[in-house]
Image (cartoon, rainbow, N blue to C red; front, top):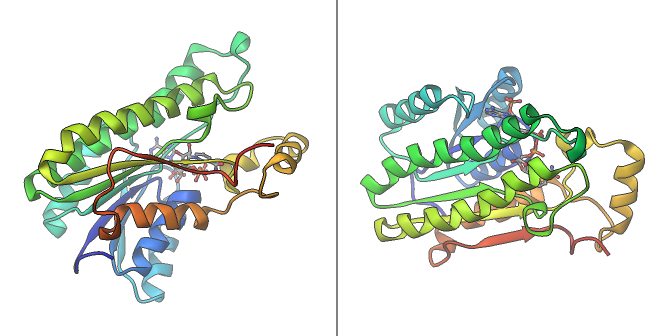
Length: 248
Ligand code: NAP
């Protein structure tokens, strides 16, 4: 699925969907650079787990909103490995508030981590991938970026819709250089992000999902790995939804 010696960087690889992606890529022989911002210890434990399973991984700390830190992280990958085959951008936050009481800080912070962070990582990755004339980028949006999501998520939904449009525009620029870019839009996935939703509301939404349950990070990771792999060599510029059929 991946050429020998492939290297991937996963932003937000320390927890949740990014963590599952890191594990899945590593199980296919890819060296995974696990990016974290605050979760250094979970990132280190993940690397230890990958190595115990016979894989190869390393950590790279950087807040994805910090331009200099993101640049330094990719420079580190370039000097250590001399290549970057895959970028997965999973770093993301929610700051849910009904719009009438949402502060501009909640709006800006969400846009900054989710959208600007995706831009900064993709830009650095593309600089390397363009030069090597190969590479695959997978961005994490959300099905809410397509259907408007739940009440109280105007900031999050705006950032996730922007990621879909951004990935399309990026793929147009990247294609002539042999680089693919696709987007994955998960529905309701069992991670820390959805744990923060009040239990009653979570149960109500869960009961409406057509497949009758929340998705697992591993189910999203398998799709991400496929899109990042050579098996998806003729697929670019697309958005793939993994949401258990959506809400009935
Ligand atoms: P999560 O469990 O809350 O994990 C969020 C991840 O983002 C953590 O690894 C965190 O790393 C990282 N992160 C946050 N701010 C960061 C920053 N400034 N710089 C670098 N890393 C940062 O979330 P998740 O559910 O796995 O979500 C992963 C992605 O999938 C997000 O983009 C999310 O929007 C998207 N998504 C999730 C769902 C869902 O239902 N869970 C549905 C649709 C889309 P640190 O802890 O190290 O800061």
